[in-house]
Image 1 (cartoon, rainbow, N blue to C red):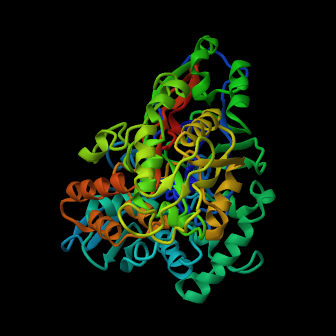
Image 2 (cartoon, rainbow, N blue to C red):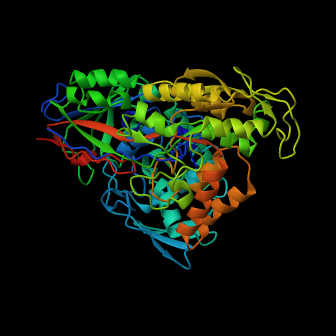
Image 3 (cartoon, helix red, strand yellow):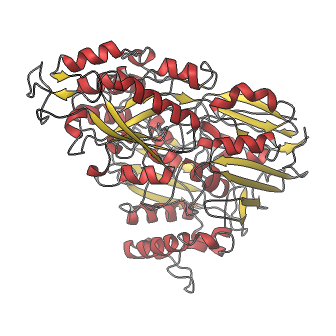
Length: 598
C-alpha cells in the first residue's frame, strides 16, 4: 500500500499516495475529492480540440503503474498520469463502483466472502489486442514476486491475503482469499488498486529479448519487473519507448517533459468511448500564484484558484466558471514518535492534546480560506465531506478546541515551566501524573524543527499562525520549507532525521479514493505504536458491521492524536466557459472522454 504522504495534489485539491501516505513516517491520510465543474467563453489555450489543464507543484513523474519504493509517485501521478493510460480494475464514484469507467463488472463475492469472481468488460489495448484475464494474472504475478519493492504494498494485505488467482477463461478471474473480508473494504481498498497490464508487450526481460511467459516463475517475474522499472527510470524516453505506447486507457503519451511539463496526450483509438477532444495538455506551475496568473491571462482551460485568491474570483468570471467541491481529504501535521530527541515528548498524550489546542483551525479557516468558503476544519481521520458516511460522533465536534489557556494548563500541570518568552522547560521529570513523562529529562525544552512544503500560500500562513499561537504556550517551532518531494523524502528518511511537519496532507484512502476508510494506511504508515489501533483497524476490514467498526476506529484516532488535525481545502476549480462536461467525483478520476467544446 502506498504511503499516504504521496498523495498531495495542489492543482485540484489543495492537496497526496492510493496510499499516497501520511508520513508520520509517511502519512498523508489519504483522500481527495475533486470538484464538478462546467463552463462557456473562448480561452487562448483552447484550439477547437485541445484542452490545457494546470497542475501545481507536483508534476507527473513515473509511467510504470507498479512503481517501486522511492519512485517519484504522487496523487498527481496516479490521477493525472497513470489513470489516463492504464485503467484500474475498478474506478470508484462518490458512493461505490463507477461502472462506466471500470475495466470489469462488479465483483461477485461467494463462499462466505472468501471467493471473488470478476468478469472483464470488452476493452482493447492500443495495439488492438483484447484485454484479457491473462493480463490480470500478469499484474498479479509481478506484484507477488516483487511485493517487497512495490510502493503500494502493505504487509498482510494484497497479495498476502490472496491464496490463489486463476483465469478459467479469457474474461474471468477467480480470486481465493485467505479469510472472509468485508466486501466493501476489499473492493474499495484492494480491488480498486488492481490492474490489467499488457502481458503480450511487457512480459520480457530485456529490450532485445523475446516476449515470453516469464512472469509465471518468481525469478522470471522479478526479472521482468527489474526490466520495466529500469525502462521507467528513463523519463526522457516516455514519449518514444514502445512499451509505454500500449495502453488500455483513453490517452497515449505524445510528449513528456519531466518536472516542468508540458505533457501532451492524444486519444487511444481503441478505447471504447474515445475522447471528444483531440489533444490533452498538462501544464506544470511551480506555485499556485503562477497558475492564477495564467488564469488571469486566459492561458489554460482548467485550473485551480488558490484559497487566498478566492476573493478575486470576479477577475476570472468573464472566461471561467467556478465549482467549489469538497473531497475525501484531510489535513494534519506529522509527528515523529521515533525521533530520539523529540519522540519521547510527543509520545505523551497530554503533549499532543496541548499542541492540538494550539491549532486555531476555525480562525485559520476564516482568515486564510475566505471564511470557510475555500476549506474547513478537520477534527479526525475521516473526511466530513462530501458525504460523511462513516464519521463518528466523537469527530463531529472539535474535542480539542483552540485554547492557549488550556494548552498552558496541560503543560504546567505535567511539570513544565513556561517562561515569558522562549521554550517551556521540563522541571519535574518523572512518570507520575504531575510529571513530564517517561524518558523526558529535566531541562528538556519544548522545541521542534517543523518543515512544510512550498507552493501553497495558505499553508505558509497556516504554519506561521500555528507557530505564533504555540509560542504563547512555550512551544517553539523552528520553521523551514522545501519542495514537496524533498519534504516527503525527509519523512521517509531515517527516524532521527525529522521532528514535525506537514505537506497539507490527505492520504485518507489513497489514490483510488473511496468513501470506505483505508484504516491500515494510517495504522501502518505512521510510527505511532498502539496495539489497540492495529486491532481496531483490522476490524474495519473483516467485521460484518463495517460502519460500527469504523466508528470505533475513528473515535480512537480522533482522541489519541497520532497526528495533529488541521484544515483541509475544497477543490476550487475553474473551467473555460466553452468547455463542457467536466466533472470530478470524490475519487479524483477525470472524465476526460466526456469533455467537449461548445
